[in-house]
Amino acid sequence: MKVTDSKLLKGFTRMCQDGFDQGWHERNGGNLSYRMKYEEVKALEEDFCFDTEWKELGTEVPTLKNEYFITKKRYETIHIVGGGSNAEWLNELTAKETGLKVIAGPGEATAIGNIGAQMIASGVYEDLWMFRKAVSESFDVKCYES
Image 1 (cartoon, rainbow, N blue to C red):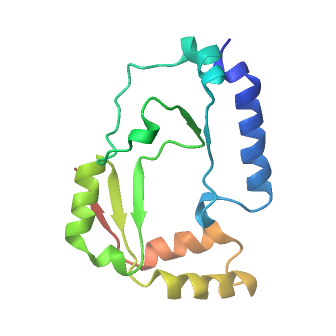
Image 2: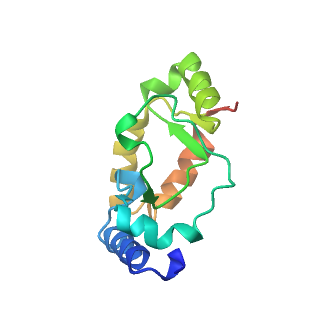
């Protein structure tokens, strides 16, 4: 059976969509994952692809060894905002250890977010995406790559 045809993936997809429809999105911590059961892995194993590059976690997690997860998204960029975005060495290390692009800034993310919520509510910006565009054009961010 193909993973895309499985009841498991269809259910996970529905759960992600239901969450998104209710406002549970990555922008507010709504990342979803599912730890597959042994029987589910065995039923779908032939459709898995093992010839792609694996990303090291940089830490040992023995309780998760040989476990399989379905996640909603593969991340290619890490965004670090707020005061921590000013820690240049930490941002460089994060990019190096994860192999992912790191975008750091703006440093005053909490204040900017509060102002943004008020501006969206009062109609200055039509939606979150328009406000994000204005922020990206107004504040400097720094990119780090391994």
